[in-house]
Length: 296
Image (cartoon, rainbow, N blue to C red; front, side, top):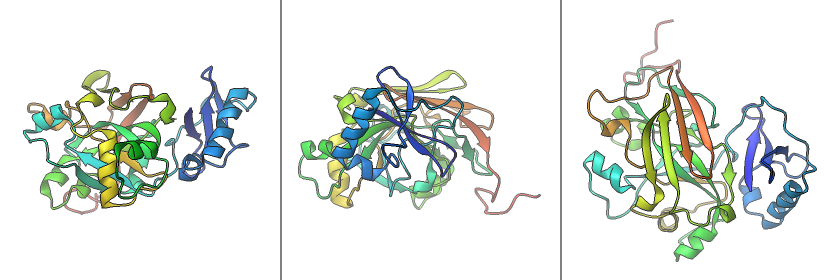
């Protein structure tokens, strides 16, 4: 199934694409696309049957598409998880996954704007395969158990402000801005993704391809990542795990590095999971580096 959430921020309603690609309103069948739904096989079966019937109302054109899963309890990121990305960063593949956390307030819709923090000079793009957890996972003992806990897959962009990451002491400073995790357009259930290590990832800026890679080049595959993360923290239904980015990020390119600028448009896609299209804008507020307020 391909599940979506439609409507204004904070008031999205569930929807799904039927076999003919028609977007149908699921409000009469389920309250939301969230961890509770993904953890309930009976309700998922009802949703599947309702979409197959082609009797649900058609969603009218022009409505906003939100993140395809309700705000996750946590967003877990993985760094340096592609061979080509580690190479362009001049870093060795780590002996174990590099894990960091992003707040759930970074999650935005697939066509919402990426808001660059005031003072941003080094905000960067990172197309990624996102994994949405479908069942509780703690101290997982096998890759099979880990994959069985997947509720769905999504296209994601792990936007990063590089100067804040480099300044330390934590990566979180460069990852935590609102809108820094565009997700969607769809959540695709695992039955439609037979091999998560055989997916193509691409990203374009203003139509120019900047990233192109494949999940086959992950240092740690999806099953291994979920199992490892579950030894550090309990993963719960609805949690989002970002699995790393392939090469081609702005930070890995020669000077002058093409970091994100207001007015650009970022398109990111994972094969079979849909393409997002996010305009880049400048956000108002405190200066990113000094904390000072901009003059009125």
